[in-house]
Length: 395
Figure (cartoon, rainbow, N blue to C red):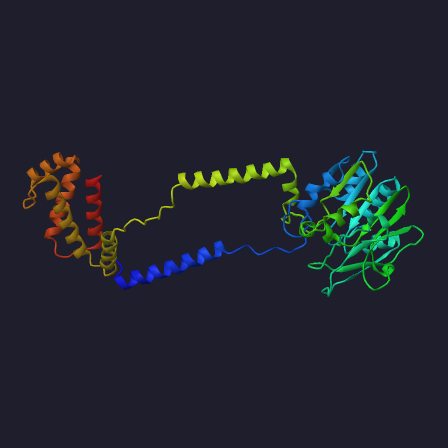
């Protein structure tokens, strides 16, 4: 099928494709530096390690991951034990309903911990603070520290890769306690990154370095800083938010409501399965369309009609009479095997017996034929009479 040259070209082409495939498969997967902060993600800025270590950081508390909207969850929760609600993400945009629910939750004596570079203007206005973030490449490492002497140690936590510097620019001094700051030559008060806001019987703990709780920095020797931050939380019940996350998987299809409802979802799957089965069996059992074939037309009949019409228009009755007589005699010879040279009484008698026509009808036909054969000129009435005798004989 192929000559030697063609085979070599095909082999070379296949080898190149194979090498490309191997290079793509064996190439290391690039690191995903996107912000996720979900407990399932093991990428640098996921929170898989934090999720696994929280029960160790809070050995006497029950840690529960919450995958609902905070407003929805807080309106349904019935546990009255002192608890803490932890939110960690690169940005937290808290809406009005969530702000109201969180304030009521803290007023009842609970703690809300939030670590993000942005906390939303509604929360800022509600708790009377402003947060400023510098979205520029850091020239040096960020070194977070604590004002309290008990948090001072020889270990230094440093952050730079994938980090932006966010600080509190103004706070409500009557209700706010400064906890942490970034070490620098500037005034520590101007570099606040961790504050506590008293509210009712509880408190808000606001922190601006969420990267400290990511997989990357927890594995980079900064776990002690994260544990120190969490030491400000004292609760018997820990709620870890899994809803306000940048990496949360959201169903974007228009069928998302159906897919989130168990009964509707399985009804949809059953319907699709039934349609597939119907298509398969209907395609196998239904005969394909058969092309309509038009029957062949009898051209001899059309030709005869055309010739007859031609003779009729020219009033050539004699010619038509001769042809009809010839056809009738030919039918007698071929059907009844009779000699038509002598049309006498014996012939009439035999023809009547073989054809089944009456002797009288047969005799009128034969006498009409004999009369017209001897006549020189023929009229239209002669043609009509012959045609009538032929019809009587055949019927």
